Length: 340
Image 1: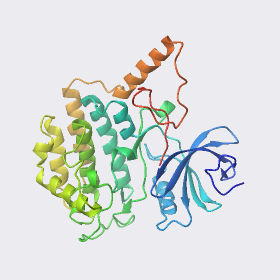
Image 2: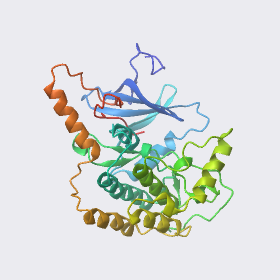
Image 3: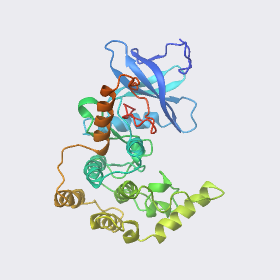
Image 4: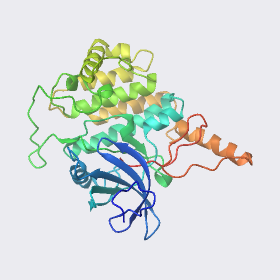
């Protein structure tokens, strides 16, 4: 067996039974592959990280997933170990990310879809916080929909940047600190994270608010800023974020979004967010707008239309295989992706 998983001729099998089929994604840590369990034919996602990586994180992430196992919207871990020159994590194969689906819906989501997502997103982050960790990289790419019977369930992934914020037994909170480097994705980072302040639960919640407004607006005011270096770009993003009042960011949208962000920004460093209050903000708005909580997201309707059109024409193209990303132009429904 070749030690190069990308080699087309090699049969790269991990954990004794997961055969790598093809690469379906990548990140700073390494690559993600679609795999098949050779004993029962089930598909799974395989995350590979070179053992020579400068900042290995897969072992840490696998331990965190183990702590989170059993939580709603947390992918199941099938196996972790070493194979050839790689650290390997085998986990549930998931559907497309919210970023993929946003693009599939021509970067426009209805208020109904945004509110149904908000409810699940708050729940996922609350669960992680209750397990004594903060995520520190809340963004659309790290929320994935499930597949098959779990296609309406939202999953939270990518815990490589997560951090324990309190002691599991005593619940003692980590101390307040400054002069920290920005951890996470600048577009969705909290203002305090930009200022170098140690992150806590409030920062995950603020980032979630920016994600919701990204879906509402189609973009955020600090996107697309040009700068010579990454450091200068982060500074420009920070300046724009701090100079944009919440009321301006949320103008033209229900007041609940500004209420959400103002609440998160008002939290003290070690204060527990009132997750139920935040969920209720959006649940009451949902009912006020007379929406039905039927799990019919914008992409659900598009997929149904695409399926109907496909059945009506004899010249329909073959449905994309599992884990294949969608073509926006063809408007084909997204297929399964991965738990990154």
